Amino acid sequence: MRSRVEELAGIRERVLAGPSARATAAQQAKGKLTVRERIGLLLDEGSFREVEPLRRHRATGFGLEAKKPYTDGVVTGWGTVEGRTVFVYAHDFRIFGGALGEAHATKIHKIMDMAIAAGAPLVSLNDGAGARIQEGVTALAGYGGIFRRNTAASGVIPQISVMLGPCAGGAAYSPALTDFVFMVRETSQMFITGPDVVKAVTGEEITQNGLGGADVHAETSGVCHFAYDDEQTCLEEVRYLLSLLPRNNRENPPAVPCDDPADRRCEALADLVPVDGNRPYDMTRVIEEIVDDGEYLEVHQRWARNIICALARLDGQVVGIVANQPQTLAGVLDIEASEKAARFVQMCDAFSIPIVTLLDVPGFLPGVGQEHGGIIRHGAKLLYAYCDATVPRISLILRKAYGGAYIVMDSQSIGADLTYAWPTNEIAVMGAEGAANVIFRRQIAEADDPEARRAELVKEYKAELMHPYYAAERGLVDDVIDPAETRSVLIAALAMLRSKHAERPARKHGNPPQ
Picture 1: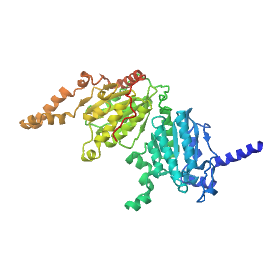
Picture 2: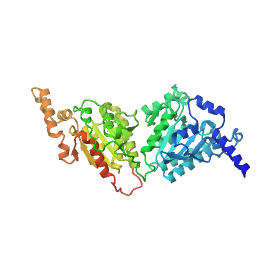
Picture 3: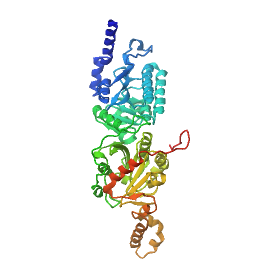
Picture 4: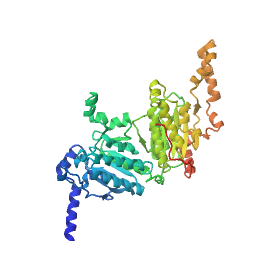
């Protein structure tokens, strides 16, 4: 027995050491950590328990029978993040370039099934070259099994994809199916067809980072939710995100003790938001003033910047915040903003995260490009997401809320539980100037001084239909509040709504606009 135990110890030592010192040096030369260093940064120290470390592939031909490394290029198992169980699989680029074969895929399938059964988050650390060509169709089938499990786990457990190297072809679809995608600049890329194929087909020349690097996906495509300069920072932020999410859809997000007083007055808000609806301001400063200790995690920070989606805490409880950003495009809703907010609302609803919506929206972005690009269809995604959400929903109108964008941004008419407004609010079909031009067109045209008459009629329209209490008088706003009391009002309302239960009609699933 002792000899067998010693033999096992030797095997485990080789497994932990990796394939070779040369392969490790090559990984480090690219500025990349090894697979076990990454897992060590993600999980609590000493908590990782590996599954199938001795697994080897069974493939033959093309030289594979002579090379059968332990783990087969993927490390799988579970550990804890701040004491809570998290499952993980991580590609080892030093082995077959992290490429996926039959045994490799089977290990991932097993750990995904374990995560779903245990009701715990799943994090994938991606650094692989795609399907293992030498194994042919069995490798492709392995990806199919991953995609099916991604879909089965969607809305059941949080799924986070961390891109730490190349991800090409069909391999890119698994991250796209998960809840959040993290990327590291310069070292991680995602694309369906690489630069060589692009050049051969279209004649365009582009680098890997130019085609599918972190900045491209964070700013242009919207595929990436978070982008960082190094792996250490990236994995620290993954841990922070996990601290804001529940383990599964049957639990609430973790609450923490809060030293920031629930009744703290936010006197600065009165100065942060100009009364003049045409003057921009930074909505992130409003969020900082309201949430616990000014801390929040913005999702898709660099994509569709005219809307903000963020996770934060109010009195220690996690909330999702959706807010127009007047500093970019005046905070209008467009195609990308609608898609961004819709996905965020759906994520919050899936994982029992209450939603607070901060409105300052002049409408949808007009233009031929927007109409031909399907703004109706994309705007309907956000409308559908809000209407379908059963978590506590509170909306607050800071300044203007015009037209269809007001309705779509969680108005009371589509199911917001409570709607508040500041005394600076203006709720209307459109701005006073535009409304006056439509309603009083003839009177303005016939006047001796059209401009003076227009100004007079605009003032009259504002006084009659756009004063701060018009919507409240008709029950469309539950209360007009002092901006300084915003934090305490939201916390009290969320506490009341914590036990909310909403019945849904029986159905297999809805058919949201795509």
